[in-house]
Length: 626
Image 1 (tube, one colour):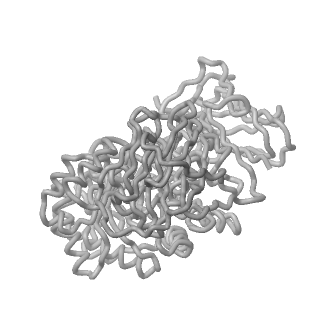
Image 2 (tube, helix red, strand yellow):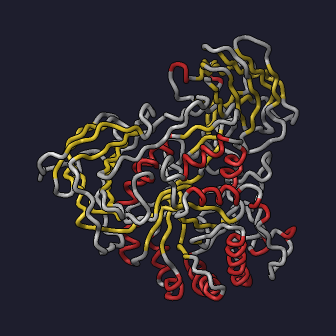
Image 3 (spheres, helix red, strand yellow):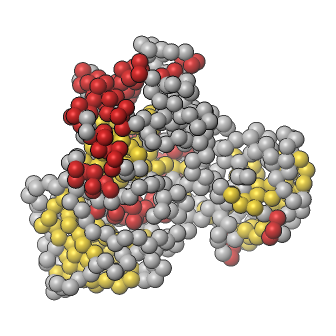
């Protein structure tokens, strides 16, 4: 049985994965001449460590010594490869609602941290769902599926009821603010499901194992649905650069919107309906094909349709299955730009690599744009609906006290997005196969070179680098660390000052970051959770700070628990009330004195108000240190 549970999140936790060394792939080369501004003898260094003791931190520069023909890593800007559109994440409904909930200076600062190319990490390649995805916050307490033309389930083939009013409350304002901070940002959108009445199963969410597919009669209707969306967003001040026809068309989701679309169906929709509809409407929106885990056979079938191929600008893939290196195979056969359109990386995500390794391997496989999944989530990895990822985080964690915490993924992605400008080119980068490091290089439009190296091993690694045949340098990179070497001017991330310090706890921590589950045999784990139905079982957390908040997934098999801090008055909580897959704040303790504290949750053994069970659970705890 999968249960809601004890999980607590530490922003600095790192899961280390060894993988194949990076060797840059051809991608789609661009042979325009490169300006030569890379003539200095000092290379600037910026570092992010696994524990975030250095987070986009400036380091002493390295001087170039004599060229080393036997260097471990070789950066060669004389071989330009694919053009880079940028790096980013997704404006999910959950993410934009959370960011919009920040008030005053916190909201403005969070947006600058994300999108400013001067003081922030300069995200410039962004995705947004068209309608509900698994990360929907509508309504907040119990997210559900929704589209822009639900019409109470009744067919509306003329789309008279079409409206983007849902997005006007917080999604569009957040995207417009991002454009204000970074006018060069590119936005593309992807539907998880069209309205239910367009589908064979008459439901946006799969019914059992049947996800439904698009009714043949509604191929032209869905194409016009895209046209209306693009025009309405443009009228609202949000230009959309590109679209994908369907998110993860090979997947049957668990409890959230989705739709199956075979490669043949997708080609028919793009070539026979979506492409012509966009052209007739005078829209120059790019169509990006597939938007699923890399699958060479799917791509071959899709691109085998000449009409679909003629309307397609690029190929999009995800990181959860297949091989990232297959991007190079696909674009090698069908030369178009390719994009990593979604990934929830380690340490908390479901991908088998962290953000830095993802960006390097994707770039080296010819990818032009790299997007992580959620831009921001709460400490419990929500709001969300359905099964999906039970422990993912965003680039920012929006805390219950109104503060936000940049995650490890924020800083690792910033090692790329802050230094690699849009329209930069990936350049040939080779790494000695037995080195145990991943590396990739770029050349910005202004002429300076950028090299990013990450150490996914558990020991420090020393290496030498040949820098564009002009010289070489040596460097030692700590385990789990990522370094950016930049020959242009220094680029500084301005970390916010005088903001609350937050700490998130998980069951794998040590010392003050460790939950003590007693008795040991009374707690089970599953689906990323821990749980107990034994009366008297306890979960104890020692923490430092002036307040702490706890989250759970309310479930009808839960019962009553008591929660206390430092032996004070206990709060009795019914964890079966209002069952939801959305993480819910269950208790807060504020105004504590500075110093160490002990929180204890006790399973009472009393059946919850649902009358079905006695389980006690937690999913996250976040404390404020000051």
